Amino acid sequence: MAEHTAATKDIDEKIAWAKINADVLRSMQNPRKGYWVALAFCVGLLSIGIYAEVHQYDIGMGPSNLNNPHMWDLYISTFVFWIGMSHSGTLLSAILHIFHADWRKPIYRFAEAMTTFSLLTALLFPIIHLGRVWNMHWVVPYLSDRGIWPNFRSPLVWDAFAITTYLTASVLFLYIGMIPDLAICRDNVKGWRRKLYTFMSVGWRGDDRQWRNFRKTYLLMACFLIPLAVSVHSIVAADFAMAIMPGWHVTSFPPYFVAGALYSGCAGIISLFVLLRYFFKFEQYMTLPILDKTCRLTFAIAMVWTYLNLIEFASVWYGHDVTSKEVLLAKFFGPYSPFFLTMLFFGMILPFALIVPKIRHNMPLIFIVSILLNIGMWLERYMIVAPTLSLAYHPWTWGVMWPSWVEWGIVIGSIGWFGLLFLIFVKVFPSVSMYEVKEMVYHRRRVVFDDAEERVMKPSRQEGS
Amino acid sequence: MKKRILGLFSDFDQAIAVVVGIRQYEVPGVTVDDITIKSPIEHPEIEEILGERSSHVPKFALSGALFGLIFGAFFLAAAQANFLVQPQGGKPVITITSNLVLIYEMLILFGVLSTFIGFLIGGRFMRKRTALDDEKINLDQVGIVVEVEEGNADPLRDLFRKHKVLEIRDRELEE
Image (cartoon, rainbow over all chains, first blue to last red):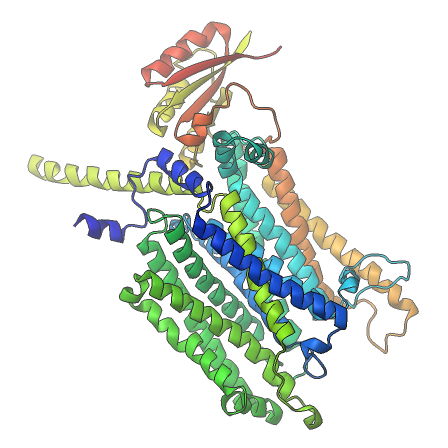
């Protein structure tokens, strides 16, 4: 009975506040062997990416196989993928914060960190894709001696603006939400960490003035961040939709991209949830009911994405633009069909696994499912980019292009880069929000006790009457 | 001479009872405006008892967003005006539709930055910690700091003790 009760509660309201501090602070100390292995693995992946990029820098874009008409391919597919992953933090932190969904509290911190690191990873791809990386500052609107400004009509410049804004906002959102926890860290550690946390907690005292300003700031930041996140992915969609290319010039692209972004972000949250729960022994905070809610949310978003995907096919089909139709048919029956059908399976069919409680509560299985969902979402981006470039309006440019080892190397390197940043984060900063879990415990305790009080009072009232 | 007295309590109920006591004038010369509450979590109920206290963060957010909007519009138009010397092929020099996207981003960027600055200023951050900033407040205790005349300190201490204070600390205010 007790086990059943524990399995239905988002959090055990009997956890002492001091224990919450102790558990989270413990997770930041003394990395175990598994941590070093994971770190070495990520450094290994990153090294492959660095080697590939150095090679490309040295030789030119030739080794990447990028050429007209395949000038985007894996780099831009992966860029869109990482931008999508970045929407996890916004969804869990900002949107659910506004809706007062307090079950997000134990898991939003790492989701916000995911947002920041995904953006830092995504940011690399347009730069790498330029080829001439030394000229990347040309996209920044600054007054140069030559009086040259970027082309403000281009969605690629909008990208630069939007991603810079999104990165700034999400870093500040992550940081502001962490200040009370940094003060806890400051009070409990010594050495270089104490100096770091003292500096970063900016003299947090926890008085009512600070909490009041904190609450308003956090809410305002959330309000800024939600339309910003939508605009960022809409602008990324505009990179495609503004081009008069078959399969891209679709009005439903921006919402389709936003839904895809939330979908992959949620799947990413599930993967990291399982890993943190296992490695840091956060079973008391990252509970099964919270995982259930995250899975249900992911499923709901998956269905929205599925609907928008089908709508896109329908628009192309009934729009009867012959070239776009050819591209769509080629996705189903052409050389890209194994990838496309895999994407459809992983993106549309596999999410139904999320509504099966037995699968949700099986940690290794749900981890595999979440990874497959993200593979599906990555394939989705690849299937947006490659087939259209292969079968555009000029038949003499038709042909299938397979990415070279350089492109694959850089994509693999990006996974290593993200993993490395995340692993450093979880050891330097608290990956569970201590003060918010305390709030959650406090309010749940009040509700439980108030209910109990009412239950006790009811029979006595009845007896009295 | 004025003093600041900190009382540490094990939970919010006792701390709230102290504030209620002060509101009911149990301590002469002390009003609710002299109270600061320190807590490990955000607790809106406390604000209800303390009464409405203003925060300027929304004003910072609004002014930052407006600045972003105006600056964005002028900055982009000024940059595009450089193209006057170049042939535009019939396209407008200042493209309002595409600029709207960028102005929107700048509105949010400056709004976010300004909100953050407002937070730092409004929360009175970056001040030296004193003996009344206790580490236990970040752990699990609730602190009430009251600014009080020396002569009224004893009734305040009595009120604290009545509500099971765990610890009392004093700090004299510099004149």
